[in-house]
Structure formats: structure tokens, C-alpha cells
Length: 146
Ligand code: CA2
Image 1 (tube, helix red, strand yellow):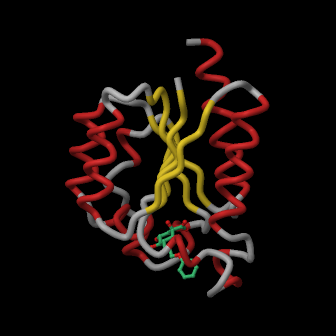
Image 2 (spheres, protein in one colour; image 1 turned 60 degrees about the horizontal axis):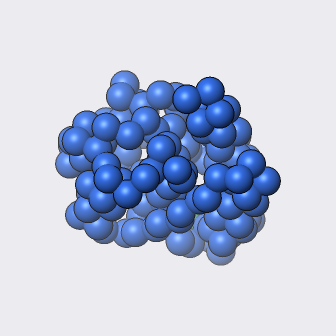
Image 3 (tube, rainbow, N blue to C red; image 1 turned 90 degrees about the vertical axis):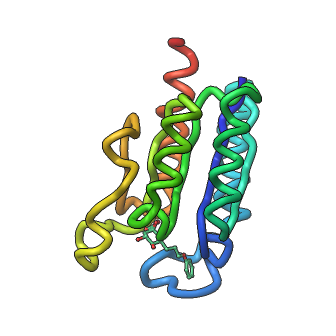
């Protein structure tokens, strides 16, 4: 049983640009912190980042049968555009949390709509990279009670 952490397009740039919006923590830092949380609870964490929509779709298909019990995803800009990722979640049938580092609701109107929120277990936005850890705390709680 494992948790899959997915980050979408441009999130590989975390900590290098736009620190006023996304902070100064790198993606490697985020992944290490979530992994450490998992290790402390005896749960393995797999991390996947891609700038390609199809690669994320294919990773979600694999999650259906590879022992993934919960997914934490920051879909980046695909949040606001991707019916394909929504459909892949529906096919994968694995519960997931949607995470946004910034508070998308106080940003441009096009960031207010998500193709995923209504099929997610929950949504985290505006808590910086801590949001990943908060989602992981929830995931571990879910796995414990499952
Ligand atoms: O707030 C979030 O986490 C977002 O998912 C980030 C996406 C944005 O399109 C969403 O509306 C909200 C963008 C990720 C870009 O990440 C960068 C990180 C550092 C430097 C440049 C881009």
C-alpha cells in the first residue's frame, strides 16, 4: 500500500522562480518531506512529476493496479484545463486530494475553476507547500482507518 504524489507542469521549477507566489521550497524538498511523513508511518511514497498531460494520464492508469491507495496531486495549470486528467481519475478509482500552493481563489478568475475538485476527497489551497504535508496527514489517517 503506498501514496502517490503527483506534480504537474512547471512545478519542477519550485523554489527557483516566483518565490512571492510559490515560496522558496524546492520540489525535491517537498518530496522528501512527504516521503519522511510516510516513512514515519510505515507507508511508502512514490513521487512523479511531469510537464506532459498524457504522462500524468498514463501514471493514473497505472495507479489503478500498482497498489496505490491514495493520490496527492498538484495538477498545476492542468487543474483548469484537463478533462483528460479528470477522466483518468474516474478510471483509476483511487481516492485523491487536490493541492494548490497558492490560494487560487484570490488569483485570476480562470484559476477559480478546477476540473478535479468535485471528484476529489478534498482540496487544499493557499497554505504554501505545507499543503502537501497537510494532505499527507489526511491520507495517512485514511489509510489507518481503511
Ligand atoms: O498554486 C498552485 O499550486 C498551482 O497549482 C500552481 C500552478 C498554477 O497554474 C495553478 O493555477 C495553481 C502553476 C505552477 C507553476 O509553478 C512554478 C513554480 C515556480 C516557478 C514557476 C512556476
